[in-house]
Image 1 (cartoon, chains in turn brown, cyan):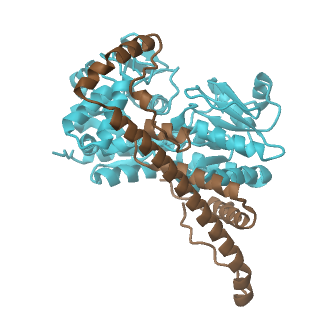
Image 2: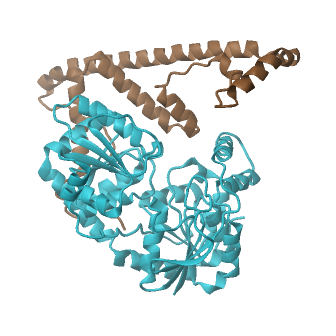
Length: 163
Length: 397
């Protein structure tokens, strides 16, 4: 079953490819840095959503636009409605007792610092991707008229596989 | 022929994909064969809490036997355990425990399958991932036909499912992409399989778009989403993209969402969330829309896509879902986007080309009429039964 119908009057693959080409051409001509940044973020989010990670982790991080900070207080603090304040009271009361056996504070402090580092690296990756994208677009814009003039042919469209 | 259908939930008020598929199939097969349905008392797919009374009853023309769920699902424990298994090496026993947590844990249903195994020529089991399907199908391996309704879900890689996909007598796939996924994962090429899908039930009465417009006060052109408003169905992402689109265009259409709201979506003057509606309203809305959007990243077959094509409407789908993309390419009935930029351009293209949009809808209609007619579905199932009879069952150790 499910063979492609014979003699379709519109070919959706062609339409999609045509639209993608138009987007690409328009991007090289018009895209501003902020638009490029938004596109890079969208692409990163799409990649993130495709990773084989647990769904709730992916959702949490995607909702925060890939920003993530670890609050050390989350370790001790309960937000449970009703019982939360009582639990917090006992945790505060017994914290010195817990610390007689082991001290989680250095670990929490370290994870807290690491989360800032991850944040910084995310920002750095995004900036680099934006820079790369802008440079690529400038380069292709600069090359295009010269190629046309020299060869007299249209630029070959990028090799896009049928999706 | 005497046929039994085993499905996790069943009822006229249950309109979810696999369950609706099972009901449509039961009613279709009932015309030519004797069909009985074995199901649970659950209505809620999250907890499987017993809702319907246990025992035998009739739903439409079909006799239905309901069995109680012994233990409702604890979504939290189940979610944590699934995450653990997906990220750690684990044993088969761990996967069996996951299956029990997944549910619906109805051992009396499995006992009934065992007790009445020879009363039916074939047992048709719906959705590979449920306790009732796994244990039921392997209780009657020589008579079981599986309708996996599988998506690109990582749990399909669990080793216990190899037993299931190799241990049944035949498999009715929903799409070529689903068949490719399962055969690629489990190498069950020797098990007879056929790509069937399901027919589209016609609307109760001829659709009247003006009735929908009047009732819901929708006077402007609109694009439509039909389904659960849920992260897993891509609804919040769709609204996010649509809002960005609408704010950058002078006269954007409305986005109308029909279906139960599970996850909240951002509110916006161009977005109308109408909640669950009856069948007739859905068809009225389909008849009046510019086109249908399905942003779901995971599907084994999109029935709403088939319904839109039946209503001669073009569709715009998420290209991340191989099944939706494949259906659009095979039918030439819709476009598929991979990014918000593409989504916006394809929205523009569809709105600016009413003639071509109409042609996409006509292509879709022709595709549905060719492959998803009731007689085609019935013939394919009967062919599968014949092939399944001829092939011995292979069990995986």
